[in-house]
Length: 383
Image 1 (cartoon, rainbow, N blue to C red):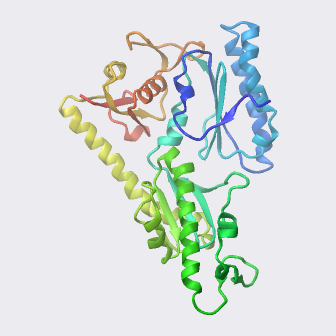
Image 2: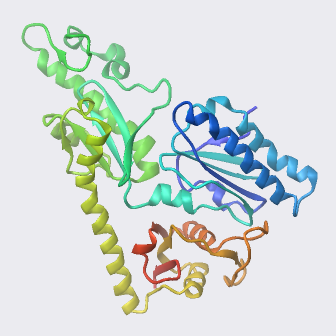
Image 3: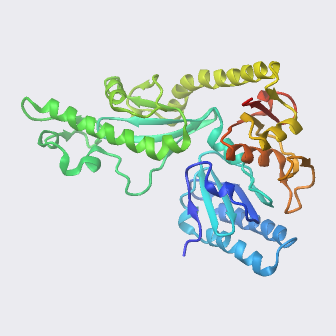
């Protein structure tokens, strides 16, 4: 029986549970053989670290309860054969969740008073990320990328991704008279006499509406990432007219997505995303400096921690490359710096980021070079 679940949305409610122990596991994974054969072995070594940490505080019976779902994950061959570039496992009493990540992560196994989530926040809220929709009149594909690269998103088995699969017996007769030459299936040539084009356009519109709803519900809403359309020039206005996806950028890429390599897609896409990425960094830094000048921002760890506990933080900036071992008092918000070896001790920056998420603050992970100040954390206050 499966004792864990795959989740996509972030943050998941598991982050806000109060009963520990809280186990966080991260490891880089591989999409293909033979490299992916090593992933379960690395995971098994991480489990030994978890078990050793649990033994410092919990009874053998409690340890077995905590380890059981984690061991089931180790034995799930189907999971290990379908990983992406990173795996995150969060486990606490009564619930264990798995994130399949498009970004690689550092191997980590920690038992603490809260989950370790900085790598997850970075994966979901890093400001250089985007999604790309490759669309033709009768098929589509999705991609996820950042400044380092781009990869195709593999849809769940059984997900309709062609016009014929989506519309089925709703296809008009005129569409069904089409045929494709050279066996490629890419570019359809239509047969018949007169009157076919309006019906073909109607089918295309139905298909585009399905693609828009699917992408918005399954990918854009959970991730909130910018979405770039790659399609022939004539398809851009049609898709824009039917789309309700607020993540869709006005600027897209004109061309047949299937004829472009991943490297070409990444190059063309980054031309659109890089100015947005740099503008976001500049905008955030300007907002921070203006707020600090008006005494509504700080880059002091103690001041920011207190403001988070008072629910006064509008935007929190966290250094993605830094760790501060310690504990944040749940009563006062004061920080006690200690070693990560203790199961009651976690990463102060991680804890504060979680608390900020819980109070509906915007949390942005930044590289060290782009952080305001030197404390590893900074905040703009609501008041």
